[in-house]
View 1 (cartoon, rainbow, N blue to C red):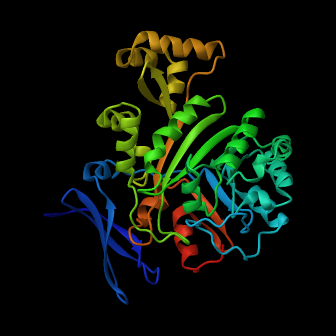
View 2: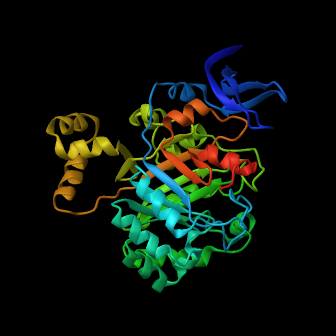
View 3: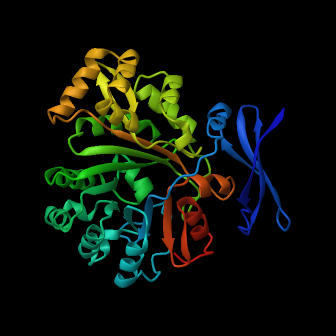
Length: 391
């Protein structure tokens, strides 16, 4: 039985023309059905959990808070999943980048590429972002961060946040995904980030059947190194750039994986997070975990902040969790002792077959800069993949 869930706009996967699309429920799966006048009908899987998808059907408009800027198209790796494989494109000039940063209303500037550490003027750009009262976030493969003097140079320029690509503890997996063995250089980069006290986010690209079984090991590593690793970003592989494999992990599947890792009932996991804040392609974002023996408890970040400042909310939380644990958590905050906190972000990017333009235009908080303007991140990747725009 087919049940219509919503009407939206999408893209023809052949010509990328914007077309009407219908999202339907069939046998507990969610599909998108659309038709291009020139290229015919298409049907694509959107989600494998209907109830989870339905929980995202709400009216919510997200404010743009992050701007991704490809500081360069050059790279010192040749990854099999690269979403920006056109490495010979001309980079933005220093002056143009400064103008874009100054004119942006986004408070967080994500410095990406290619590999942004290949730009010699990166420290100057970091200083400029800081001067403009915005937060620079370096998104990097970490190869140059194995040089401690270079890490110190970036830190002295004003860099406080790094998102480091970390896909495995197995060199054969790196060779498969990134084209060469990288584990030791990644660990050296993390050691240097720890030395300078850098707020670090591990960004994992999950390839189903290759490194999805390593997520618990990576999570445990984040907890063991929570003094500087404060965030874990899990993003499922998608058909962008060089990557053509279509079998992807959906957000509902990643939630199942992490509910087991955290030893938390999946339904409780879902109840704690305010679904009104997230599109169906992402989950989490600002979640705080603290451990009770071998049991993890989840509190959303906004709720956590209220818990510290509002007695009324604190009383409500006492009813939900054990008083002793909450008291310890709050006392640690008051005396300045760090609690065991890790933000978790799960993403399953849409592709040209199942992208919901209404969803991303209203709720995606991240734009990516191109030479033709700014686009929601995954939309930008799709257009770039087809060489429609020049990033």
